[in-house]
Image (cartoon, rainbow, N blue to C red):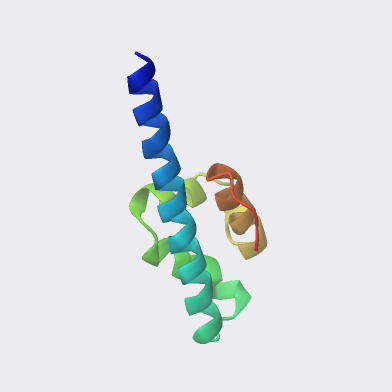
Length: 83
């Protein structure tokens, strides 16, 4: 049982690390492409994996359009720091 828990934790840690890399790459793309902040969420939803896009879609519509709010949701979900 302990081994299963350890394996699950390692899988979650890897998923969080992978997602952190995806988030960082997406942020860099947005800056490089000079995407206005008002359009960032639309771009993210289209380019992120569907399970992550669903996190954004579950938010109230007004909040889901605010890039800073969406970024915070993703950071909290994957227990990361902005950096």
